[in-house]
Image 1: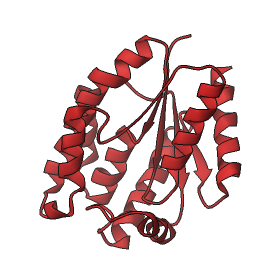
Image 2 (image 1 turned 90 degrees about the vertical axis):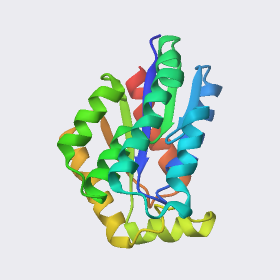
Image 3 (image 1 turned 180 degrees about the vertical axis):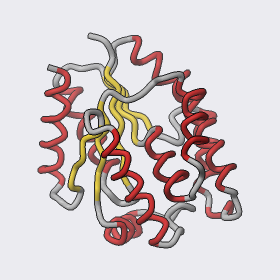
Image 4 (image 1 turned 90 degrees about the horizontal axis):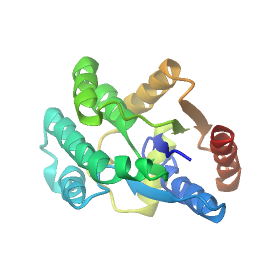
Length: 206
């Protein structure tokens, strides 16, 4: 079997991280070779970049600096983790990928989308997920959820207007690529969402 690339996307507090873990566990039990990874991060260099990006000490970071750092982490991630695993027939599940950059830096920060896509082309070399699971939830609910479970990072400190723009961006992306991106109502229960994701992924595999 050739490798399968799956990305999980959504605003803060949408529940994608727990669902990516549940899917990984499910596929491992079914006998698939699976790698679960995340962005920013996934590599030693990527983790150092992640610290820079998410630290609340770096509130003064410019949008373009942010854009370039996310892409630097991604370039390393693709070369070190994603491509080698896909070539070896693994299912690669990543918590965030290129759509996060379009939604957060494009729609959230207001960076020109043509610049984002031109950088993406260089960084990914055309590597794109086979399936993207997008978790959609009201921005205010997502932020309340997230602030209840972990210490705030730099992006979570943004006002609700920023997160609403990000959500709108994600929904715009879905409308452009409905075949790849599958929309999930993230307000539903954990088991119900997991069942829907399993159905989407197994339909694709089979």
